[in-house]
Figure 1 (tube, rainbow, N blue to C red):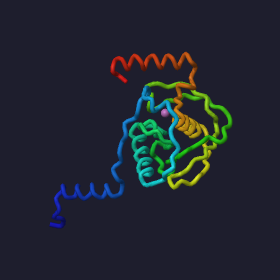
Figure 2: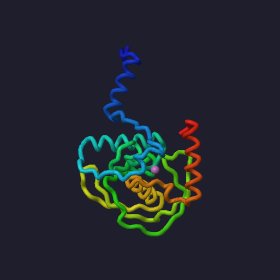
Figure 3: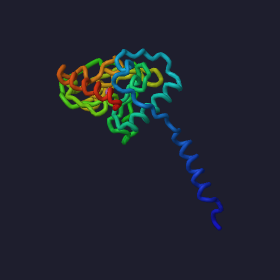
Figure 4: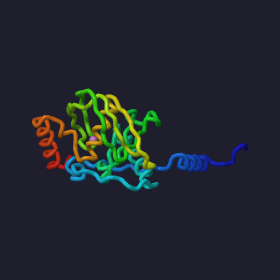
Amino acid sequence: MADKSTSSEKLAAAAEATAVAAPLRKIYPIVKYGDPVLEKPASTIKNFDAELETLSEDMFASMYAAQGVGLAAPQIGKSIRLAVVDVTGGKNPEAKIVLINPEVTHGEGEVREEEGCLSIPGFRGYVMRPQFVTVRAQNLKGETFEIRGENLLARAFCHEIDHLNGILFLQHLSMLKRDLIKRKIKKMRKEGEW
Ligand code: NI
């Protein structure tokens, strides 16, 4: 017999190897519209430690699980200025962007496009955003960097930075459209569907 190990032993060994290569990530539930954490400005991050790195990786995993292209810390109930963005939805590891204490320093052009939010599932609306933006942020080491985004990436940067300021895309809609969505959500909440 060439191989004495049983298939269950092989499976266990394979599982162990996987665990070493990619630690199990925590998948956070996404906070929904109505929770006050979504509508208050988040605090500046001052400690760039291993905990922050773990949190950002868990946020990517949570975002991919929810099929989003951006996620801000208030959306997992943490009122801190951290957001993750990946407009490829996990297809390209190099597209992962961590933004800590980010600010839009420049915007140019205007694009009106439909937008949604993981915290407001099932609702979308047209929002005007700059076509190009420059964002200044810090990375996980606390180093300041600048990044430019165009179209969807620019939109994702603006949407996530809005979250860190307690602003939801609903605030960019017409009052009529916004009130319609708010009424529907209120009704869903009453019926226990939100
Ligand atoms: Ni959002």
